[in-house]
Length: 129
Image: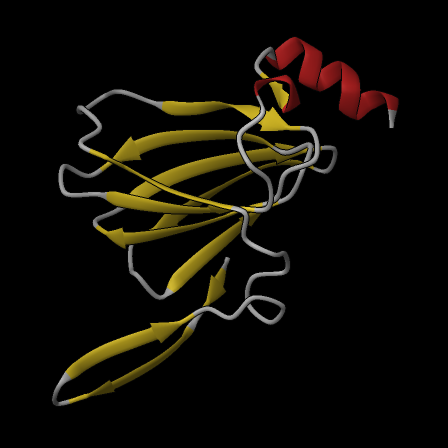
């Protein structure tokens, strides 16, 4: 997880994420996830070639990531925190606060064939490498 540069004064706060500096890829797709019902999870997939950068612009989101090195859990609970998800990383968006808005910046357009939706297939791929 990375803290993004934030500038705060009596007018409020401004947080900056720069491509090539904070976000290590060119952004080709942007979307946001919100109004996730309590106890519902999202994600549960990996991408073959796509990088994603997640920012909870409002509320709180708990995220589990798994790659060939193991599993880690992160909490995005402020709009100045960003989380990079590299390719071949299984992601589970485990809990959204009622007011959560999760911004996702992606290195590639949506292509269903680039997703790994089976956890068993994901494990097979990362153990081959």
